[in-house]
Length: 93
Image (cartoon, rainbow, N blue to C red):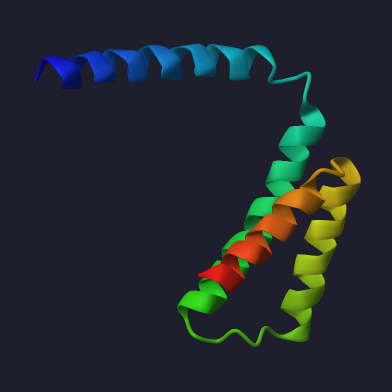
């Protein structure tokens, strides 16, 4: 019981420090936020299509996903790594 409360305290302190660090840098990294905003919907659409067992997306969804990926990469070029890791994890799972 003593170890779990100590671990919980360390977790809460770490969470608090991370929250302060993230809010401190919130407006200086606008491109990171834009990249995240444009990456999440395509990932959710792809995961939803996999959950529904209909992996064949329509051409409209493919264009929409490609457009959002392109905007994300334009705002933050490191998004290519996230996209590659997402597709790699999909193939490994």
